[in-house]
Image (cartoon, rainbow, N blue to C red; front, side):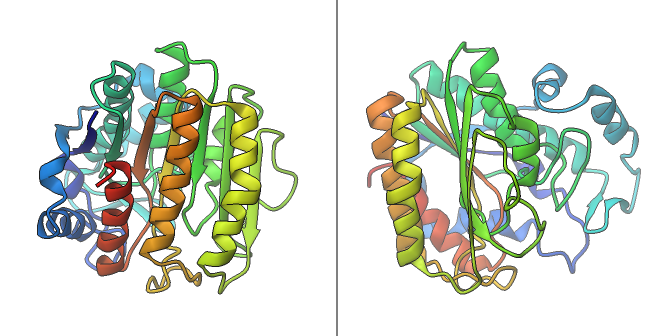
Length: 307
């Protein structure tokens, strides 16, 4: 079986200003490093298509989708959130970011791939049902999870989020959907200042203090996530793969390193092997120190591809 690498050049055309940390350079750093370490040649490269409106509407309000399209500027930038803006290329990039995850689901469900990593941007896990937020426009993983449930007839899927920031948008969209189990850790208190108070019953949120290192995160994975996932028996696992909990990333204050991301990935693969016919779809979220991001993605993808 094979690991897919799903991306599109359109995802690099979206940008929010030369000062903005969520930049096209993130994808270039990942791509160049995967080539340099000899990983890309082992992956199945797939272009991300645009997501259909019906696919987006499984996670988002249709009026919001229409409103977002109406805001596309012909030049320059349009702000949709204090730290989130659109340029003329944003709409296509956002459609392909969500569409890439949908495409990954289709390939994995057809048995053409064992798992896939979607190197797409803009990221998604802060995008709410009817609001852009935190660099995110569409919630790529939530769109993919609902596609697996509603288009492919799965009964149970898990969403794992290891970004340094709480995936508030994913939680809002998937809260109380008993077909979904979402498990995450995140720095707290920290943006978006959510996740620690009364999460929905299908959410396993583990707030962690600044300075948390890999040994504590590994304990959370082994003692909290894995038992819950085994009890839930997901038929597919989705990963919101943010790498900004890395110790070199200035947008967070946690202390993970590449080997921690490899460990988390291997543990999730073991769960997928037991319950989900090895089916995993991972999608890029945060990670803003370019070197740390590239190295961490390589560790994650190397584990997925069992290389």
